[in-house]
Amino acid sequence: MSSSNPYQDDRGNKDRSITNPTGQGTAMPRSKSGAVTSAPGGPFLIGEAMTGGYGKGPDILHECTIAVDRGEIAVIVGPNGAGKSTAMKAVFGMLDVRSGRVLLDGEDITALTPQDRVVKGMGFVPQTSNIFTSMTVEENLEMGAFIRKDDFRDTMAQVYDLFPILKEKRHQAAGELSGGQRQQVAVGRALMTKPKVLMLDEPTAGVSPIVMDELFDRIIEVARTGIPILMVEQNARQALEIADKGYVLVQGRNAFTDTGKALMADPEVRRSFLGG
Image (cartoon, rainbow, N blue to C red; front, side, top):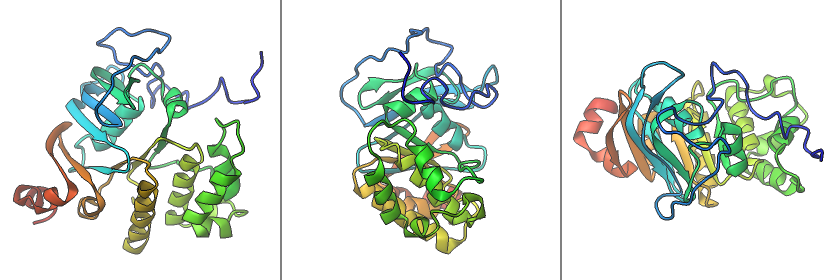
């Protein structure tokens, strides 16, 4: 029986050099069907004791754990090369988790591909190449709803309420927008899937401080709707200021884990990662 969704059997990037095509680790044999098993309790989303890297390369993560619960903003910070984005991609299934597991709302999803995780409710916004530049703003948002079979006009209206500039520029090519506006398109497109959790990789990279503050304000608004947000951010001080929970990674390992406020007040964290 043919599907009404033309992308049903062709979702996701097929470039094996940048994504994990099987969505699973190599250390623990798993069902090829990608069946999930129940694991009640715990955070809404957790990458638990993850060790792994890309392809046959060396491990980048070493028993790294990151998690976020409903309505929370959890941020991952640390020095360059600490494995922040790698940890995010591990949770999303884009590299081999050789040991450890990923749970979403109590289900073990370690065996699922990234595109299957989107269907399960994970919205992911990569740092770069995260919009279709030749398409209009509205067409970008429509592409975000490609897995849905219901009427998504209400969701689009909510995105326009959250990012009014996008409604104003909805017929403009997304590639003509400023960096901050492009990021709003990318986040808006992810929200069009009606995600259960939103993952943002360096959402403020390359934007001005004013635009960064505006993006953080919008991220807070999204979290207040109950959607958990897991975010990698290079602007550690500003990110920890809005974070319910913070993870400081060093060389792929958890160095510090606490509330954003507690990490901001920790003398060692301030001295080592926040410039004193």
